[in-house]
Image 1 (cartoon, rainbow, N blue to C red):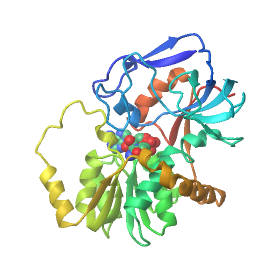
Image 2 (cartoon, rainbow, N blue to C red):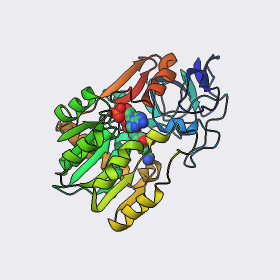
Image 3 (cartoon, rainbow, N blue to C red):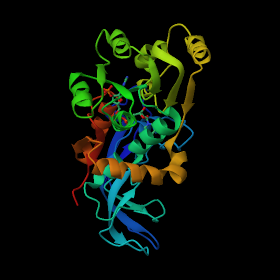
Length: 337
Ligand code: NDP
C-alpha cells in the first residue's frame, strides 16, 4: 500500500521534498467498514491550502506525516458493511494512497458508470462549482459578456460552456496558444486570450469592447488587474478561487490597491460574492446532475481530462497544476481495476 504523505509545509510553490512516499501494509477493514482500492485520484487547487499549518476554515488542514487528502473513484475490494458489495464502484475520499478504509458514510455508489473518472470532474465537484457559481451568483443573461480564466481547466471550461448555452458572449483567458485554440475551437468560446502575452491587458480590452458583465474569478493576480477596469455597472463577480496567490508566502509588495478595488465595487455597483461548493450539495446538486447529463447527452458540453499515470507521479502533477501545466481536469490513474 503506497501512500503519499505531507512531509513539510511548503513555503511558496511546493517542491517534491514537501511530499513523502511511504509503503505500509494494506489495512484490514473492521466491523462496518469497507476496504477501497483507489482507481482515480483527483488533483485540485484547494489541496494547496490544506498543506498550510493553519487551514482555510472550510476544511481541516492535512497534519504533517498524514496522507494527502483527495477525492477518488475507488473500487470496494472487501466489505463488512451492508449495502456495499465487493466490486462496487464508488466516489470516495480515499486520498493519495492505493488503499483506504471507509465506514461507508462518505461514499457515493457510481453503478456501472462509463468513464468513471468524470465523477471527479465534469460530473462532479469542479463542474458543480462552475454551475452554482455561474448560474446562482453570476446570473448571465443573453447578450452579456462573461469572462473566465483558467478557461480550459476543470471549472473554467464548464463555466464558459454553460454561459454560451445561456446566450452570453464568452471570453476565456488561458495560459498558452494551444489552450486558447482549444477554448475557441472545441469548447465554443467566442474568444480566448493568452495570459502570458505581453499585451494581455490590451488584448483582453479589445475582446471585451462592451465591457464585462460577469467575471467568474478563478485566479486573481494580473488577470484580475486587467479585468477590473473593464467591469460594467452592475457586474457580477462570483469569487471561486484565486490560484495566482495560493503560493504567496508574504503579503505582496507595492502600493495598497484595496481602495481602488473598493472604489470600483462602489461606483460600478458590483456584486462580488464568494462561495464554497460544499455548502450547495443539499439544495443544488440534483439540478446540476440533471442539467449536466442532458447537456452531455446532447453534445452541448465537452469535457477534457488530463490523466497522469501512477500514484508516484501525483506530487509532480500537482506542482504542475499550480503552474498551469495541466490541460483539462487533472486526475491520476492509480490502478485500472
Ligand atoms: P484548473 O483545472 O483550472 O487548473 C488550474 C489552472 O489555473 C491552471 O491550469 C492554470 O491555467 C491556472 N493558473 C495557475 N496559476 C496561475 C496564475 N498564477 N495566474 C493565472 N492562472 C493560473 O483548476 P480547477 O478548475 O480545479 O480550479 C479553478 C479555480 O476554482 C481554482 O482557483 C480553485 O481553487 C477554484 N475552486 C473553488 C471551489 C469553491 O468551492 N469555491 C471549488 C473548486 C475549485 P492556465 O495556464 O490556462 O492559465
